[in-house]
Image 1: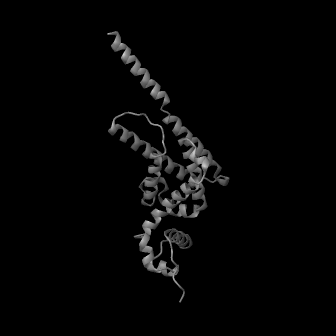
Image 2: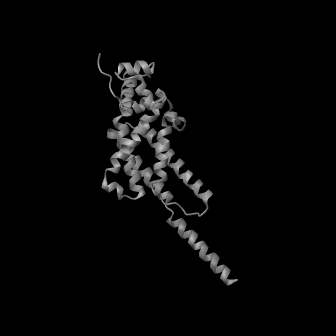
Image 3: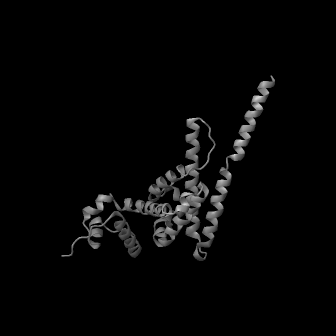
Length: 218
């Protein structure tokens, strides 16, 4: 009898992706899936509670793998938030492209309403945490509740932008997904241009100056 494999979480994810692409459906049971891939059923439950949990971890793995690549780059560490996010997008979509068949399988039925997709839950958590810690310059309101609202709005807007880009990529039929690359560059740059707080800060400073001068003149 062949010795059972000591499979890791990433091994199980890879085996699951292979299975659904070959059979166009989930395995019938965890037992059958483990037996077909020569590992103990209990090993599956060390990492995942169900096949649905595996599906959520697939997209989180794409995110994690992208960050691992980026964080090995000295150039990335010195980038400003705009260029860090651009680098993330290009690396993340390289990962999606390398696994395009699986991504299409997982998302195709609800690609027009991806906000509701449970398989993207862990990706959303990881991505919005990344956005919140990217150092994007926001207006310093000095009011805790408003700062929280501003940060939450930034994270939700960035998440919707990522979903929109994923949908564009799924529909993209251009060679090497050139149109998606253009879409990424234009959308990320546009979002940062909209977020540019320097003019707003200048306006606020000017308003404060006018207010102070009017008080002095009274």
